[in-house]
Structures are given as structure tokens and as C-alpha cells.
Image 1 (cartoon, protein in one colour):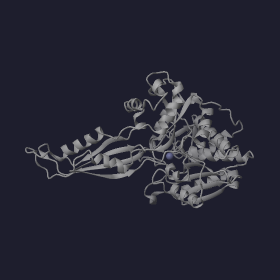
Image 2 (cartoon, helix red, strand yellow):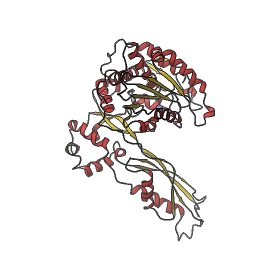
Image 3 (cartoon, helix red, strand yellow):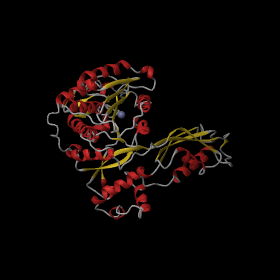
Image 4 (cartoon, protein in one colour):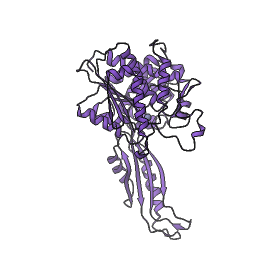
Length: 468
Ligand SMILES: [Zn+2]
């Protein structure tokens, strides 16, 4: 099935200036706003030129909004008339990843051309994530140019270094905290993968995930010391043997799987659509069948990561230089992706209890899972409602986000931080393009995503009359 077959109500907002909007996105793609960890390499004039271009391109947003440049990040405040309504914040980031040296020639269109051709808008950032940044500005501009008055304050927040260190998002959050801002909801990029629900017992149905939190990330280092020696006398074992046993002990005895709120909610949503046993029966009463459901999930590739902290041994070093020599000091790394129930401190304690005392453990790097956002909430309901209007064959389920984004920085300001880019590009195009070569977005998928953003902004910030 093609994602485009799922699009509905594409004739909404018939006077939306599609052609001019495509040109504006194309223009934004011409600025090489590449971020590097080494900020000395960043061309900040590209950011400045793009910000000037955006101001010129969106005259109503420019006139009505307060544009603040914080570092090189951009915070636009469009004041609402009702101070009792907490503001809504729409995110994106200005920066893009570099073009891998040597691959420039593989691009059908120059990565910073912004070419519009063959039904696509081409360029680095077309999928990550200038299409969202420009789409949010298009939404605000359309509403303001049609005389809409925001009742709720709208923030548009565009970081400068999401692909590297997120300092831009941190600076924006600090500024908002100092003003005492509490947010009704936050929308950032993320999730949006369309998956056949066969493993849920609902073959032929399709789920699409909305990211409600990020899993934690940790590189656990294991070290074993040894003097080595001739391998004809391995009476005390070798460092490689002990390290292997430690790795095996950990991956075979991971902390138990858990049913998160997200999975429980998804079971409830999908239950009426399930046609296959045993899930059909279990989903009716997840509490009574928790053990069976967890067992089912952990045995399926599409589901196990939703309920379990995963462990992937990825690196090993220090092996002997020859087959008849015992290795000396050795080191290995296991990469974990942690569910919220397994914070790093607890996980390393769990691992220590599994390995011998001669194996040293520490985190080479770690960050705990982010705080899961509220599912039964105004922001999630509003987003889900709009998405169902535009993609009525999809079942939208709350889930974890695959990667890390700027979004977690905003968690102190709201318990409703959602990661969802509404641009349902075909899978082969996005797999190739995001951070890859020939990044592009189809005009049709982009315009459909802009409709989602526009309607969400309209329903929650213009029309809204409940105090959420
Ligand atoms: Zn991104």
C-alpha cells in the first residue's frame, strides 16, 4: 500500500496558495544551514540569511509576531487574546546534516538547489525538517492573512543545532522558563511510521505512531584485566573468556518487559479491529493477560522494543595478536535502549549483579528515557482528531520515538510533548532521503502535512474554547 492512498480531504483550504508555498519551501532549502559539533565549522551567515528570508516571506507573521533570535535559534511569539489559555508550541529545527564528502555527485539535484521537479521538492532538509518549519509558518500566515485571531498564544520555536547538541533548544526553553511559560502542548518532528497491524492480531489494518517519549540510550563499558601469557596454560581462564561470559550473562538476563501506558492505550484502540486470536481475546482484558501479552510482544520483531530495554553488544577490543597468546586487558561495549522503567542507575546495578567481580562496568555515555507525555490529554486528542480527518484508514497510536530530538528539552514546560511529523512520504523516499542522498519530499505529501498543521493550529489556537 502506498501512503498517498491514505490521504483524505485534500480539497480542504481550497484557497491555500499551494504553488507559492512550494516556492517558499524551495527557497528555504537553498540555505546551507549545516550544523557541526565543532561550531567553528558552522556558517552562521546561512542561518541569518534564512531568517531574513523567512521574515520577508511571511509578512503577516512578521507584522504580528515577536521575532527573537536567541543565539542563532528563532523564537516567534504570536500573542493570543486570552491569557487564561496556556500557549501551544510548534517546533522544528533550522539546521541540517552535512552532505557526506564524496557523495555530492550522487545527487540528482544539487543538495542546496531547492529544485522543484518530477513532483518533488529537492534538497537537504526537505524531510528533516525544513518542510515542518516552513509548514508551521505557512499555517500561521494563512490563518493571519484570513483575519483569524489567535485566542491562544502560538510559539514557533526553531532550534539551530538539533542534529548535534541541542543547545539552541535549551536556550529557548531557558528563556521561556524565565517568563514562567506553561504550555498546553508541544509538537515536534518524529514517529509517523505506518505499519501493518498483523502482529497485533489485526492484519490489514495499519497503525501510525505518535511519539510520546524517547527511550533512554546507554553505552555500557565492560573491562577485564589480565596479564596474558602462553595459551598452553589457561588454568585461570582468559580475559576474552570472562568478557564473553559477562556479555552473555547480561543479554540473557535482561530486566523484565513492561506494559507501558502507550501499549495499553494501543491495545484498547486496536481491540475492536482485531480479528485474530489470541490477541483478540487478550486485548479485551490486558490486566488479566499481561504475562501472555508481554511474552507475545517480546517474541515479535515489530513489537519487542515497545516493551523491553534492548541490549546490543557492539564493540570489543584487546584480543591477542596470535592464536597461541592469551589476551591481556580487554574491553567491550553493550548498547542499551532503555524503557522508562529501567533508568541507567538501576540498569547498571542489575548488570553488576550478573557478572563476576573481576569485570568492571561503567557507562561510556548514557541518558535516561524521557518522561512519557500524557496520552489522555488535550494535545493528543486534538492531534489525533486532525490526523483521523486526513488519514482515516490509519489507527494512530501513542508510542516511543525512535531517535532523540530537541523535544525532550521542552518536557519541563509541558507534560504533553508530542513527536509527530505529519508528512507521510512513501517509505522508500524517506528511507533514502533522511540524512541520505537525494533528500526530497513529494509536493502532495508536503501539502497534506501542511493541512494537518494548519488545521491543528486553527482548531487549538483560533477556534478553541475549552480551557485546556
Ligand atoms: Zn530533525
